[in-house]
Image (cartoon, rainbow, N blue to C red; front, side, top):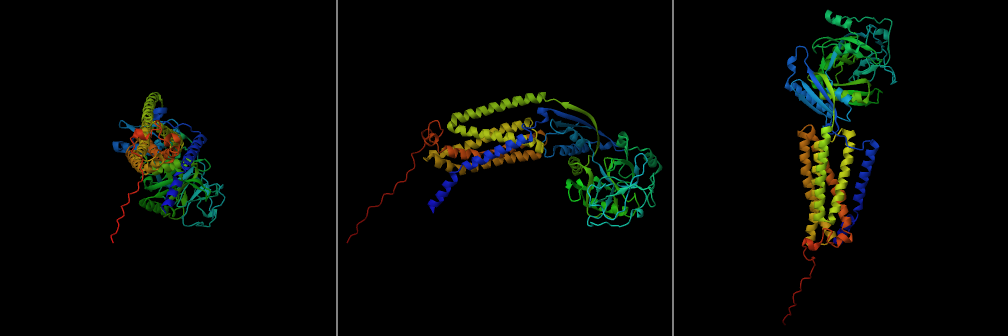
Length: 590
């Protein structure tokens, strides 16, 4: 049995080529992916590559001047940072300046337009009942037809939005168009549902009134609001930007929105029934089942679900257009579905003319919450990388000096073994470079000066792992063993020490990444990445390569330049087994 076990171990250790082939394939695959992506260099942070700096000024709302305080400014910074940074390593810097300003630094290579929209959009979301609506310019809004069942053709015109219970897949009413109220209804192209269904065939009718009028049972808006509504021209961007300014959530207001035909409509809306803070989470989803394309799904909180069920239950009892509710994002109506029954599921979906990017942007803003303040973009400037370039050059020189000193030490102390260590360092450097280049376009990782510092520190961590293993091998040789058994006997103890050491380094990097923000996270991320790669290189490259080299005469014979000379190491004489002398036979006396 002992001989069989020895044979298995010999077979396992005689195939180091497998590990070397595996890491070689990984390097080739990652390098191929890097060139295929077109990003052959790591993405640099704003301190190294320059970028865009945006200054935002907090604007007080009417009667709420005291809202601009340290607490709300810090909250706004936190929300903006989460919106832009994603995983926290894309190096967008968000910080306050003074009492009213926030500075956002976006590194070169980031979609600055998208980032500006993310940080500047307040993302205040309200669900408001519709009092009246018409096309901007005085035209009649198209009336949704009362067809009993939506068309299955996804290319159908989703002019009017319809709210139905998500548990029912059939139409709630089979009435004809003439049975529907003749008051105008919206053709807004986005719907919010529990599964809200878009009525597929909107058609303008001759009976549609050219002027909005509230139907029976609805509260008439006051004269001032009617006057503002009459003057509202939603076809002008400057007018849309100020529509409803100063209105509180508890007050009725006017607003603008664009329907699926690209036409602008104007609205009189009632007080907000559901607030954006009642949204628990939001996600961008590609809806392939109904052909709706990219949608934004929302899940309400417990309180929000109750509010949503209450308002849809009330609206279901009213006539069009007052059986509609408008989803208002930052003062603009993004959807205005009508309802026929209370929606109690606690979920909603915004669908319409979304692209993947616009759906993800909206979900991102809704998930991270609305900014507590409104901000005005004061200035946008381009940042140069002159100072950062000088610092990078100095850092690279320092790193090169450190690497040279490590190599000189290895050559002087380990001699032939040093070439295994240098080869391992080169493999680790190649993996680090390729992975950093790929992480730029995938998760937004940007290499800044602290990250460069982390990479330099990693040189020492990686070299330390080689030294631990080499010293274990030398200890075995000092005990009188030959090289090949020493390589295998030293590995279990060296492996344990290397794993414990790298685990401590990785744990420190993880804690630092979690508890810090900004550039320090770049240092922590790089340190953690290089620590993981150290384990990979030692296990898949250094150990198998040393196993192969131990079969070479130069190393196996203990050449004085191999770094494994038994005499230079003060090795004991080879261990030899000797037979125990047999005891003299005692003669038996008769």
